[in-house]
Image 1 (tube, rainbow, N blue to C red):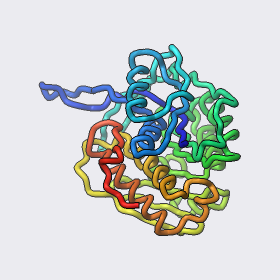
Image 2: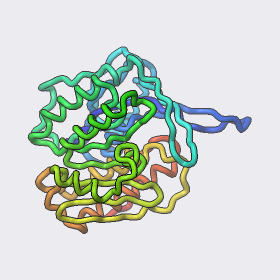
Image 3: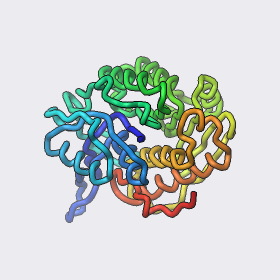
Length: 311
């Protein structure tokens, strides 16, 4: 099984009304839930670990996840309210306003001993859950238990407007990166974390500390990856008509993990020996899944029947 641990929320995504004025519509989101949904829709056995409310929006989240074949038996249901995120698109980038005080996601705790990690091929973590102290501490405990047998995937998916103490946040992201076998981030995230530092030296440093694979997504410019054995690989983004880019990075992450799983290369030692061609195919598949997600509003990763791919 593949697990994704972290945030589940409702995005209020931009739309228009009949008078041409700005409006928003609710859509299930949350980076880590999106990753779980993306993996499950492609056909991987997938579960979600995190807090989901029992309120109206929480029921929307649970129904959406279940309809996408995501197992929720490891999720924690509570009567805390659902996190809400309002989205505006500025110069092609999604900007968020979060309402996240005393929510189900914020109050999630890792139930130690509840997960049989020897049956879990990979665990994905990241995003807004790691901004607050409790979420980061609980996720860190989960990663510590999972690392003995499961590949750890990490996407910081930074949200600067939630960060109150940037030095502390940077140190926390470095800690999670140090525990990760696969690190994916956008070029925007990279700039927030590392400033003007070139990509390649930082990728080499991450590989040197034990990370197996480092990937940076660059929007219309595709993605570039570094691997100790397979080398540096670049893939192009497909040409699509963009509705919005909400969930595109999550869809890329989900598809990359799925592709590695499909190729039998997701386990830590198997990922170490992946070939250049295998990695290129996995990255290209991920880029195409992300591109399809961009053609429709909100975080709506593709189903397996929507992607033509020969393995």
